[in-house]
Length: 616
Image (tube, rainbow, N blue to C red; front, side):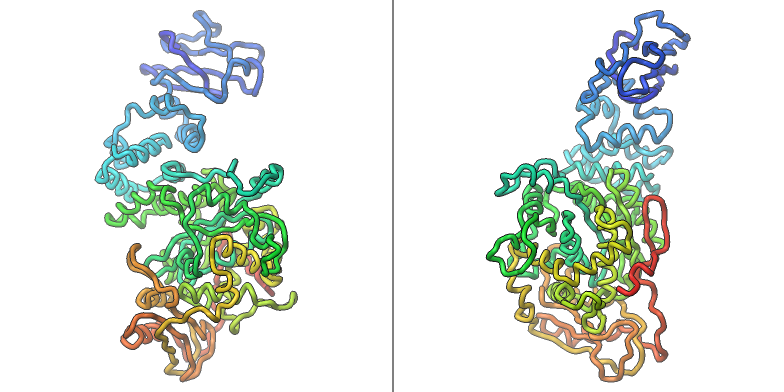
């Protein structure tokens, strides 16, 4: 307001800033159109020299009518005012709200960003987090990540900042801003106008683009093959499931490795190709296809690996975290996980947050805290997010290993039982896998507007699992992504591992549990997993269980079978380690621990209603 500095207004009821140790305020109209209330003009009611001005004694500030405002290009050209509006807002929340909302949009001009960040240096950012007196603004975080990607922030400076975060933590708003900055460091999915192949029907194309997009993320476990069933199952209801998944590392398996065990299955797609794939016509629409599925409609389901240019900041930061012992920081974990999901730009997200021996979180309290942080981050980034907290003490399902897990999923999706029957395969060895899958699918159907309640969603999902619609959508997905459909149509013809051995029970008793962490580590030894990201995997290697927790076993019973292409591994230690992973008790095992313990939303944590899965 001084020295003829020009000012175009942001749209707040009141803007307040400090300049030269004096306070200035501007009142703006409360409505979307018209002049100020009561016909008054908008002007500074307190001048920077501190004198009250009940009426303008100097040139009044411009009237802020709708006609005089450009909402698309609102900028502040006075650097001091911009910095103070964001950094010295009335409350701390105001600062984050003002800046975080503009990170993923084009409403903030480069001039404004430059004004906001002109005083920043890497040392300023590091010192602020180290001192931990007040949280970062979203603009500060965005600037720091951008400078890191441009090489102006060095690795040792980023490492210092990451360590400060590890020691002092981050607020939910800071974590959301860091997540969005990671997202903006690379390519982001744009669903507004993908170039659809062979589509001349604009109305149909628009309808497909408006379909609710819902995804799922798991924090990882042993035998966790849920995504292979879940994505086609949910897509069979007409929802779009744009799933990006990872490879196995350490004791946990990877969805991408499992799918790549299907010959020809392609997992690498550019962002635009991924959108085209999801919105393209299902292969079963081809009358020459023998799958017998319903005709019409888009594919809607695809599982791919994140492209190299998606969230590159996360990749570089994780490499630094890995060698500086900052991997376990909760806000850094949250931003790393959520950035890749948010880059998909789904409408909603369901999380499967695991705890137990085979999880990265040993106890339920850790998993609940992680779930709450991820949900808050997702919600602050504009994505409805919920979570199920599930136990990973025992391997999920009866198979561990890439092709073995695909084969188990095929068996479940082609079970072909009567409508009134329960889903049972191999003496219910897959029941835990089916329960988790149905619970997640039910919640995804709720969030996608297909079901009113979780119980209703579970019942609907079970029906599509039994009537073959999930299987047909899986078959369509495999064909669309280049996989050999004959391989999944006839899984018995898949090449088996060169070496195999049975794990025999040395005693009679009851199996109380199976150590999933140990099973996962043995899987790596067999070749089903990897110790480093560069290491290849053996698709045919793994472990198949014949008995699971709760079962009665007799001496001489086969507990499991191990498969590998590596000579000498079975005889030397693998079989013995699998045997030692089984906990056998002399007394009958009662009820097993709850598989799904909690349901978490932005409103809080509640116990999972076990009746949701009753009689399924």
